[in-house]
Image 1 (cartoon, rainbow over the protein chains, first blue to last red):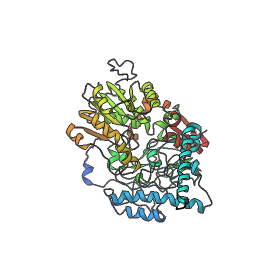
Image 2 (cartoon, each protein chain N blue to C red; image 1 turned 90 degrees about the vertical axis):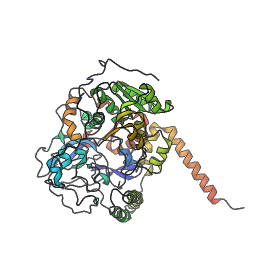
Image 3 (cartoon, chains in turn cyan, red; image 1 turned 120 degrees about the horizontal axis):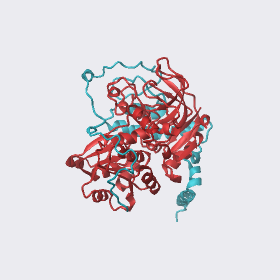
Image 4 (cartoon, each protein chain N blue to C red; image 1 turned 90 degrees about the horizontal axis):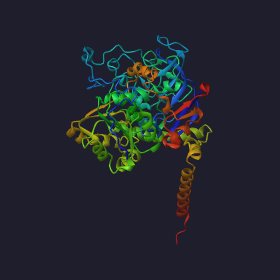
Length: 162
Length: 383
């Protein structure tokens, strides 16, 4: 491996232009102000209308002034998410149920697709067209392994017992 | 409108969705003209971030044209072309007032550890993101910044995250003139951190990754040393040896949860999800640092726990600094740097992909196909 220790920095464009001996300690620094002593007391922005279900961490007292409205909790995954939000961000009972809810939600997504008459194109969703263009041998290998495993599983499951 | 639609781990597609509406008097609606896929989007894509709901639209790196504003918006007008920082920040809370715009307390109900982020799961607020034709932008007077006339949109879109995060990675390292800086990861953030480390006066900048095409890129782009850890017995011993057995003054984790290079971390962090991602880069960084050195973390991890050598942090007296980039705080300086040619972000973009092909773009980026460094999605109206 090549190793070099440059001492002359003239070849480095704009070397040191932002150098600052005072940049240590540096960002992020906590700058205390008198307002800090007053807790959650700032002049809050206007509250966004809460007309959907918004789960909020139990480490805060309220819903934030603005919030995202993407995909409110619903179905079985929603029930799991509601359970998760009864526990703090400090607890595995918060995060692990959320991961489980995410996996349940995937199944719900497939069911939703079928219920709307849509058959999800898994190959397109996984971007296999890009594999065909840029990684054809890898794709062929992947499909080959998948075919072998499937064939072996079918043979094993359908084999007659002696 | 067309929008990316998450369907499950490694499954995304383009779908028709309703256009966003003004829901708050400080909202704006932005017609997206460029939207990148970020390395941290891959954590969502791989299903590693809790509360990533099916049907969500990702995308936190985007620029576009303001098409509608709420009644309280005063600084923007319809027709403005804006850079939209990836953080959603109110500008009023204690944290925003300290310049901690990535830690706003009025933009994320679901988690107190991080402020709101566009298109980054409900753990970051549940906002649909910019990999779409239109997006709702809250607190429009705080974050969005009008793109200076003449600025290339490819440069502008990289000012939403890549440039500020790379710059802040170097800044948080507290780099002093002559310091040796070791950066783990030659993705877009690591590349930018390498370039920016020189601006702070680094004496040596060393980047470590395993992808030769990225190492070659960063060598040329950032004029730094770049090495392949797969050619080393042990990257920590390599760093010690190349620094006269002292270790680096500053290490930067520019990888995060998707790190490879340590089988145990990969299995427990990425495959079994027993950790909040693979902490290989942090592990190597802590052990590569000189005693009393500084670790700057901008790599993204999930909200649960990671296996890191915290005993060595104590015993070596290491300072750890970490945060989401405070984009709003850094934008004025970084816009100047881009306009003055100090930083040239555009070459990082290797793939310009129609929004409709979002699934292929994710796959190419995730699998590092076709020498991909940074893909940008372009909606039909911007082509």
